[in-house]
Length: 56
Image 1 (cartoon, one colour):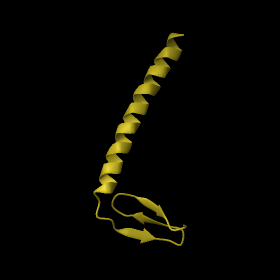
Image 2 (cartoon, rainbow, N blue to C red; image 1 turned 90 degrees about the vertical axis):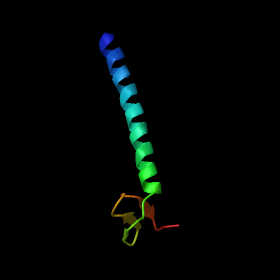
Image 3 (cartoon, one colour; image 1 turned 45 degrees about the horizontal axis):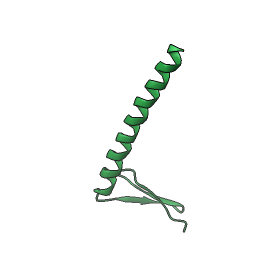
């Protein structure tokens, strides 16, 4: 049982870290002066890796 509790605790910590990193990436992408490379289906910023679909 201790192993399960330890794993659950590690998962919780990692999820919190992931949320923090996602927030940082969102802020970086929101403040980026984008330089897009386009394909027929999407475009991606070379600086911040923001990805936008060109299919509407």
